[in-house]
Image (cartoon, rainbow, N blue to C red; front, side, top):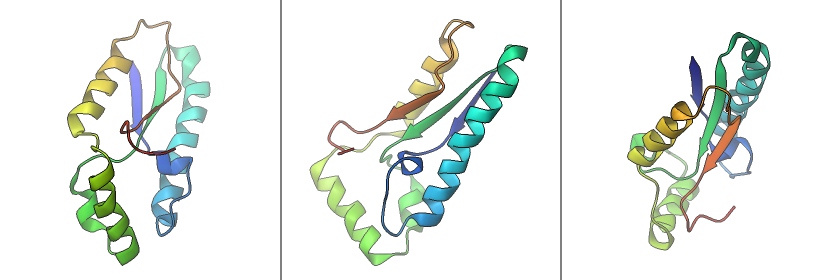
Length: 114
């Protein structure tokens, strides 16, 4: 069995105006590490995937003007990930041999700075 949780690079990096979002994603990553420790002996693989910028409806919920400007500007400097990129990565994690567990995977647009 596999448990693959969706976190974000915001769990690791600092993004002004995204404190609450980042905190919730840090929780998901940390919870995944603990669950991996607890469930690994039961042959359950647990991973956290931490995407960078992905083109989804999430951006339409951002209300901070500075954050909105930053997001819009980022579209000019890089090609965002797609939901299909994330789905393909989840599929890759699930397709690994049962003895292999990638604890955490960070996936970012090629042009997105760390």
